[in-house]
Amino acid sequence: MGIFKGNSSEKFEWKATESGPRYYPMEIISGSLKYHDGSGATYVPDGVTLNHGWGKGVSSHVIGDGINPLPNRLTLTFFSYTENQFYQGDFELPYEKILTLFQQGFYSANEEEHVTYDSIMVGVAPGGTVSVWLLSIDGAIEVFSGQAEKADIDWTRIIDNPDITRKEFIRLEIEESISPEALQALKQNGVPLGLWQTYRKRYDWQPLFTGLEPPRLITRLRYFNGENEFLYYPLDEANATALRPIPKEMRFVWEWPKGRRLLFELTFNEAEIFAVFKQLSAQGQPIKLEMRMEVKEDKKTYFSVLLRNEKEEISLKRTNLENYGAD
Image (cartoon, rainbow, N blue to C red; front, side, top):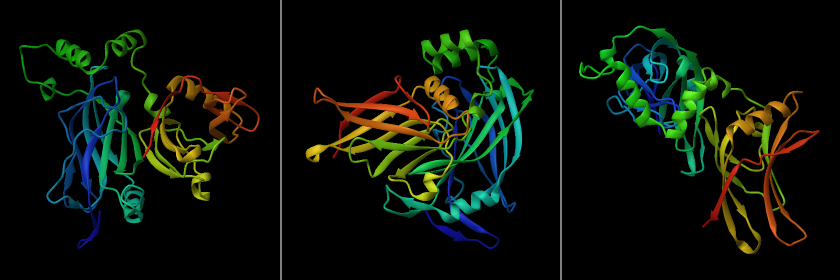
């Protein structure tokens, strides 16, 4: 993606996309990312039920050839099905931060060249939570989080059909959007308002590989706050000291003896990993997320995942592990 010089500002090739959390369907009624120079806006995609996962884009919207100024404001109206509640917000975005990130770009492990971001994603969640991320083929970074206000909006903005009641339409939309297990959990526990703000907390932690030759690249590290990135291992100084959200998923290739290579995919249990992070970070100590490979007395190889600080270590027993042969 290139940088294009306009009369009053730099322009970039980018599109808008939208996101909502799994199990708590949302719908954007209208949204606009307004250009900082006042010349126009790119509209946030609307009219789609959002339940694909926090930080995962659904559709996209491009204005003209897609080469436009960057935004400094976001206006938004949306609906939370599990709350039966409309929200509205008018937010000032951190333009200078967004501009700097687009200008700086980064080295892409996929493209094997220096690139920049190509999308701006707007996420909405129950309770009025709003987040904005910059996206690329190699990752996503959050640049804004805000709080929308409850609003009284005409129901016909969702559907203008007198043959179906609001209550019935919401029931059908929820039942079609989430699994029976998730629906039962929703009925028992209610909507976890504030959950998506807790995802944003950052910790002093980094990955650690022991037991075999460590991977040179973590091919994807996804976080609960919707961010994701590639990491080269061992970490350079900037990445070694960076604060990170709690990880959700991790993929890496581990070199095996005799030239064999295995792709590992880890999916962390949300309740378990959040509880352990809270416990180990209570005294402000740095944390290591260790992937440990051990050859024991029976000559078999064992893989384990654990979190540790300088005083204790706790095994993450509920982590889902899959591995495959890698080319």
